[in-house]
Length: 502
Image (cartoon, rainbow, N blue to C red; front, side, top):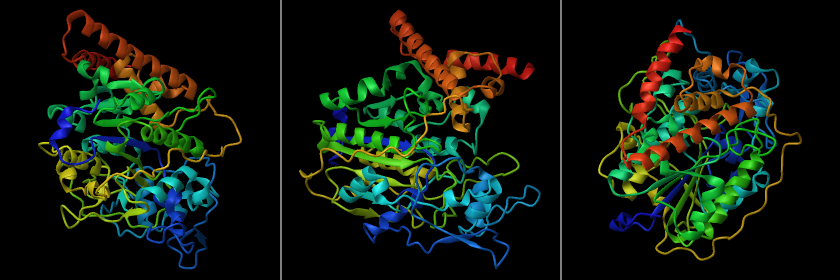
């Protein structure tokens, strides 16, 4: 339950709920919402990209409004994003770390990936196609200038959500996954100040990327979503900071609901609807702020230039050959905010500080948590710079007319889940994280080589169950709250040496 320490602040919000979905840009998901509210910086239908940025007579591909089920997954590596936002291909031998941002290379990059893919990349959902978002944007608030924290893929952007840094990671860093990323997170900051947190997971919690969360004392902060979330809502037992992790693995028995292509967006809509309705019926409703965003744009078009001149969180430089200084943000992503303290139809644009160049990005989450709960210090220079979204709470009293139920989404995918498909990059990263918890001596690359979605899911579920059971066993034996991460790190050290010799 939310800690009584929250009463020390005058802010009406005592519980912040965060859901981070996968790989969709603002224009792709919400660009056409401009038809609902012209104040939203969305699309008009005149937006386009050339097939070739070097040919002034190139055919242009115009942004459309017929998005639906998406397959395959567009490229969203650092190199691909570089081309998408600058119109220039990345040249390892002659890198330009600060290209002019034109947002004109999405089509060129998509066609290089696969012929015809630009029709997918240059396409957005009509509001009625994503009815849950339509109702939430109409009833509450949308931020039309929220960016990914860096122009890279899922893992490093997710790290920023709770720690305001990726500790130098720009892509999958297997060694760091095995050891756990060492930076301090907002979870420890909350705990240090007497507040509570809970992570509600559906397959495997990606928050275990952080080394600190592998400590024994945090085992009981992880809750199976299906068994715990609605019950905690009903009983008024939600902690101060709630993180909901979607289903990242798509199987026949339970469709993925994280919105990662080729997963069905209607499943993500169902998840958001379920979360909202549980929160709406909770006795804690009048103290809740619910935020939905996406980790990165997934290669889909967005027309708003990505900001540059951004402060590095910790002065760590990215690895060769990129030598990235973490001084540019990634593409714009959706961000929706829900609370009875928000006026209908609120639109947030750029923040009003704390710096003249501040933007909303994933580090805005720990920055806002710090402000709401009056925490003692920032995590890095990035959350100290990021805009806070506490101003979205723009009423003097909570509304009583918030809808209790939302529209049921319509399934988009005609086919069944492809549980025999190979793992995506992010799913591989989850498996490799699970290997560290499980103490698996198989090489991390060989481990995922022939895994399917279904076998990968089984692997991560088994690993987490082992972590959870052994953690509670140790607590039961000695009553200590010391860290199991030391044991895991010793295992990782031994495994690393074994893997080097394989």
